[in-house]
Length: 110
Length: 109
Image (cartoon, rainbow over all chains, first blue to last red; front, side, top):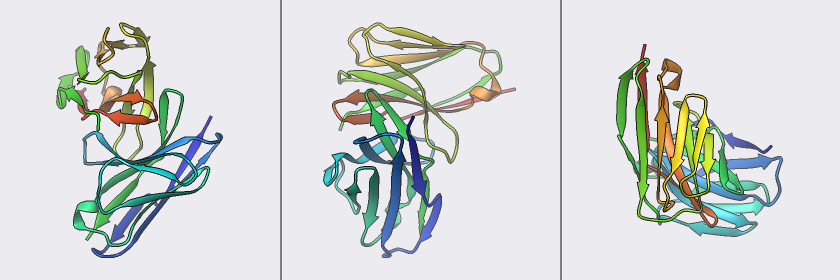
């Protein structure tokens, strides 16, 4: 079964600083990969998904971007963070009809 | 963006009571999943349903997929404090998974 590694677990960044969150997947090849953001106690908002290397689809236009430089690596980035970028970010991969998640990154922009 | 609405948003019940959580959408999904999430962790898959009208049971949890594959319900019998958490439904269509708005359940001992 697949394992999803996501880091860091927590991050505090000043407004205007850059961001790079990394996600790697083990135990599967050519997975669909996803980045979600979650407000406290609420559902997940799909930000980006990727069906292959270099293939990124954006669901919601915002201050973030994603890249997939390798088959099992998915990176979420920003050039300049905003206060509104604070939240809980989750990386996921899917096989068939099911999605599996990393442990998440709690980002606080101050 | 597909939208899945869950109800209720918050639920606080006594241990031993029964409850039902609903997940509704105007879109048809090829599959629907239910997840449970603990604070500060990623969601964990509970069940996947793929056939309209399908019913699956997982111990005290019963999941049903609507006939039109647009909605689902989660019923918990004799709730226990260990059932406390955020319950999320998710609809799969093509390469995307869209998540519901979430139901925060608290079971009081």
